[in-house]
Structures are given as C-alpha cells and as structure tokens.
Length: 442
Ligand SMILES: Cc1cc2nc3c(=O)[nH]c(=O)nc-3n(C[C@H](O)[C@H](O)[C@H](O)COP(=O)(O)OP(=O)(O)OC[C@H]3O[C@@H](n4cnc5c(N)ncnc54)[C@H](O)[C@@H]3O)c2cc1C
Image (cartoon, rainbow, N blue to C red; front, side):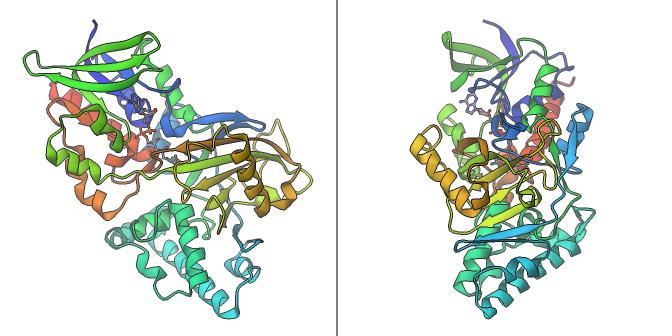
C-alpha cells in the first residue's frame, strides 16, 4: 500500500485547492473524491449556449477565487445587471429603478411605499459600506448583527417579499445571517452592482478542473467515496477507507484533510473529541435545489436584460441571469441561461430525474416568465444536501475551534472560512497547505 504524507477527502475547491498549493512541496498527496469528477459545488454542465453552472455562479472580484482565476489564465466576463425584478401574485415586474419595480406590483399604496423605502435604504446602505464593489471598514459594524430587525414592523405582504429577496440573494433566513453578508448578496442586486462579480466563460468548475490538471497524474482518485478515517496510535498513521469501483480500498497517510461539508465529517471520523463535534455542529450548510434553464429569447429580447428576479411564493426564490444584456455564447446568439435558486425548497433528492416533478418546476418557471413558453432549449435540475455555508453569528464565534486540527487531522471548507463561497474554501486551502508544510519544517 502506498503511504502518503497527506490524504485529502473531498475534491471541491478546498480539497483540490490544498493539493494545488502543495504541488511543488515534494510531499506525496492523494485526493479522494466521491463523485466522478472534481469540482464539488462548483459543478458545471453543458446546455445549449455552453457551460451552465449548476451550483456556484460568480467569481467575486478581489477574492482568492479571482486571484486563482487570473493565475490559471481563465476567461471571465463581468456581471452587469441593469435591471432588478420581483414576481409576486402572478405579476412579474422588472425595471431599472426600485420605483419602476415596485410600482408594477399588485400592492396597496401603503405597501408599495414601505417596500420602496426598504429597497432604497438597503441600496443606500450598500453604497455607504462599499467602494468599487468591495466592503470598506465601514461595513465592520454589520458583522455582529443580523438583518432580522429590518423585517420587524413591516406589513405581512411586504415582509414576505423582503424575506424572499434576502433568502434569494443571501441563501439564509434574515434571522440567521449577518447584515454584512446579507448586503453583499442581496442589496447588491437592487443596487445594480456591476463591479463585484465575474462569470467564468467555461463555467465555475473550470477553476477546480484547471488546478487538477496541474497536479501529478494519479494524485486524484475520483469515484472514491471515503467511509472511514481511523488512527493507529502505535504507527502514528491514518487509514482512510474508500469505496471505489475496485471495491473497498485503503489508503495510508501521516495526515488527513477533511474537505467535505462539515455535517458529513462525524460519520467518516467517528472518534472526534467532544469540543470538535460541538464546533462542527455550528457550521450548518442548509440544502438547496437549483434549476438552470437555457432558453432562446432572440425574439423576446427584453428577457436578455433580466438580471435578478426575486420570485415570491414559487418553488424557488429567484431567477438569475448571470450574463444580462448578452447572449450566453457568441457562437449561439439568442440563448440565455436562467438559474433558479430554491433555497426555501431545500434538498429535494426526488426531483432531479423525475419527469413529472421536473415538469412541475419548469411550469413554475414559466408562470414567472410566460413569454418563454416554447422557447426552452434545455434544463438541468440539481439538488444539494449541503449547499451554502451560511455565515451566522454561531459559526463566526466557533471558527477557531472549527479550524483547529485534531492531531494530524485537518479541517477545511467554505464552512471553516470567515466568508463562505469558493473564495472562502480556497483561503482555507491555503491555510491548511501552509500548516502541513509548516508542521514539517519544509
Ligand atoms: C447553488 C450554489 C450557489 C453558489 N454560488 C456561489 C458563487 O456564486 N460564488 C462562489 O464563490 N461560491 C458559490 N457557492 C459556494 C461554493 O460552491 C462552495 O463554497 C464551494 O464549492 C465549497 O468548496 P468545498 O471544497 O468546501 O466543498 P464542496 O464544493 O462541497 O466539495 C466537497 C467535495 O467533497 C466530496 N465528498 C463528499 N463526501 C465525500 C466522501 N465521503 N468521500 C470523498 N469525497 C466526498 C463531494 O463530492 C465534493 O466534491 C455556491 C454553491 C451552491 C450550491
């Protein structure tokens, strides 16, 4: 059996990022990934119009993901939304100003005034705490409060719209997520922020795939689902057991990195100390289902300009076009990709591949965008048991314990970062790679 310096469990940004950082360290590294490909939640699929993201959408400017994309020479285009929209009670109102959006909705005058005030306040606050699309020191105070109080006192219908808009943009419930995070992911849409997000032409997975290509052949085994990590104190060696196409296979390593969503770790490493279990419990990653649709909108061009539409009372919370104002690919004019985020629907293992259920989801989409009936050219539904590592106060408080190694076991993922997203996972990859190298005095 080959002996490795480090066995990495999980081939998402955290796992592959760590292997990539260690590629010239001289250490023997083995990465085991359960799926048939590396990428994790950055998975991209092919639809008419080219690569379509089934999970992560954007490269946030100025983050570690952005640096890596440039280092790897991958092509991106900016996300440049000119519109924002809300679909409510059978009416889809898309406009260039908050006023236009709100005035098109079936609300009373009092409700419209309330909703407009909240959207305008959020946009103003976003402008106050950012510069060039990136947070400044003025955003610090927002890291210790949630946005729940902003919903207090709102009339029920306005609260329903705002709660959906926050969940759509920031994935979590208003009571769970810190205000800084909510502003970044929610308010930036009605603010028409054009400077903080970029889209990878070949899909979000291309970052992880490009890193994997730069590793030694054989460094990665896909279709290798790790079931157990056990420590032998006499030999000071970890045995990692994985189910592979060849059957149950064991790998030995001096150190192990757990780079899978936090809730999966306890089942793989049963004998963790109590403090570690408590810390991992603070890193919740709620489920989500996504549906990406490729539609030919060449003869309904206003649909090309859709950016983010918050969808209230549907299976999903929003429809996002990450290339507004453009066709998805210059080679296939007319095609636009619409991503529906279903944060409230959560994990739906029975939907993907179920024809009836998929039809219902498509019909739900068409009820928001009726002009696209007959124009859908392809779709993909994906469900995520562990979707997005929300940054709530509980996780923020537990971060140092979440990251603390247990002997030779390391822990990294978006859930151990100070942010979330692929950028958080890549920062964590850098940290673990430095720890592994530092621990050996290399
Ligand atoms: C719908 C959605 C939208 C998102 N939007 C963005 C965005 O716009 N920008 C952004 O930067 N990020 C976004 N993200 C988040 C981003 O995808 C994640 O933060 C990132 O992928 C986390 O990386 P990770 O390596 O920690 O975990 P993952 O990507 O989840 O990788 C973990 C890997 O471990 C594997 N695994 C699990 N169990 C085992 C096992 N037992 N044995 C072996 N392997 C195992 C999994 O198959 C997976 O490949 C989004 C995610 C989703 C789902």
